[in-house]
Length: 202
Image 1 (tube, helix red, strand yellow):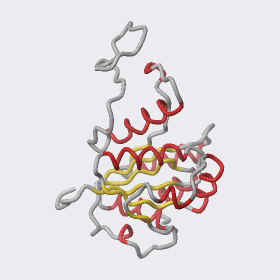
Image 2 (spheres, rainbow, N blue to C red):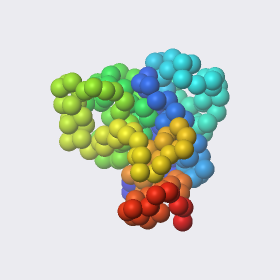
Image 3 (cartoon, rainbow, N blue to C red):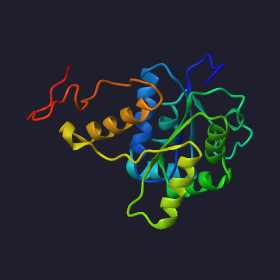
């Protein structure tokens, strides 16, 4: 990340179930004064309409800059556009497959490809189960290329009290990978000790 003077991150949202993760990432990054550049796939907007009450405009308002999925000439398509990296939340198996094969057929996958080639942090919050062998091989491929596969697996030792607790914990842990302390959350060995019967915050 040498030469980057502005805190800026690309947020991608694909069509997998779990758009709440992308929404939470945008909210937390705004609280951290990180400039967000959002790109949502066509299927991502379909999922938005199924899983949330947000309009397209309301979702886009959470980001500082929005980029159309087909705008392959956008700033995100060039490695000279400096960013801290990219998070795709959620990341569908189709998006993972395109990234693994280097098929930059949309701005979402092109931005991910740029992130890898520039050796920046790429975090993929993949959503699918069960997994077959092609899924696993694609995960291995992107990991070998430098990406981090980050399934949003709930941490129940935190004793979550709401769906938002679960989503927030996963997204905060994903943003930890960028060196960002997005929010105080229960952390094992810090605010949660072995044998505690209820969570306590520092």
